[in-house]
Amino acid sequence: MYKFNQALAGTKLTAAQKAETVNKMVQELVEGQKSGKTARNMWGTVDQRVQTILNPPKRKPDPKRDYWPNAGYNALLFLMIFTFMYGIISFFPSKGTHSQLWELLVSLLVPQLPELEFHW
Image 1 (tube, one colour):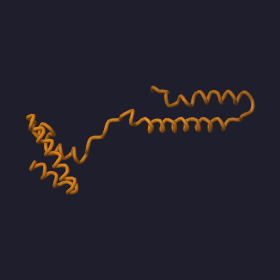
Image 2: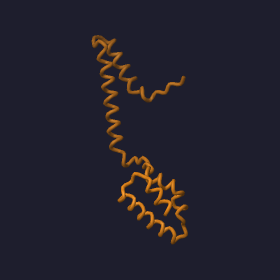
Image 3: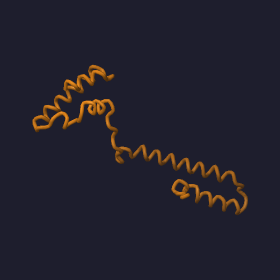
Image 4: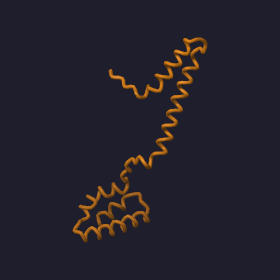
């Protein structure tokens, strides 16, 4: 803990954050020592633990938690594809069956573009 306190003193953490971190680690260390664990077994080297505190690991993506943002992004994507398709169709003249054929082709192909894979 002495080396950890020295390494922690060299960081930009506030005094309150340092004290909270040290108190939490002491409690975990006491609990771990009851079962025979050492500080190195629990957290690795001092430098590794300081890096873990300064740069905590990112959370893994959770589909249940991320459902609504993903649904919103998908809705925006479909809106963008529809708007793009509608814009392309508006460039073609709307008289006769020739333009209806173009509308049919564009409306069938444009939504499929993100799913197509081109192998060169």
